[in-house]
Amino acid sequence: MATRCRIGMELEDGTIKSSYCHWDGYPTGVGKTLIENYNEIEKIKDLLSFGDMSYLAPEIHPSGETHSFDSAEENVTVFYKRDRGESQVNSVITSKDELFSAMYNFLDFIYLYKDGNWYYTYAKNEDWKNLNIIFQDFALTS
Image: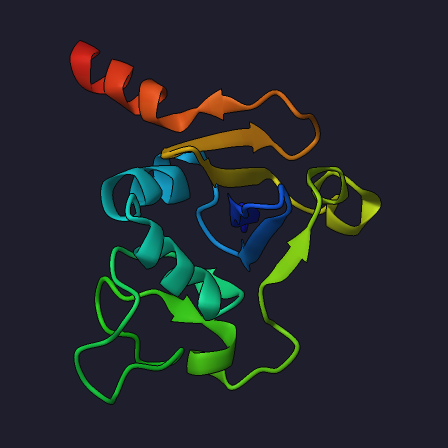
């Protein structure tokens, strides 16, 4: 079963640019991958430029030309448009309120990069948690 999420970043005007991710949207899946691999603004912008994805991996760009949905390179994100040839799967720009609207009520989690930190919330409420702190605390207790 999919754990669906949106991955986004707050823009200068307060809106959010985000993309849908179908698999592994829980904090120890997508959240951990974001913390470990997506902490530079340019890499986050690059990630969101490809639109919706099947799953998030540490890398955005494949090293060869054979990467596809059916034959994905290990550790490379699979995007619906680039790797599956689908249309109508671009990132969207919305307000925070719109992320919690009926349009997105199928989501399990929402991730937001803002002010140099990753935050997440269960998509049914707006109780944002600092993902950086959660993983830092987890590392200290492990």
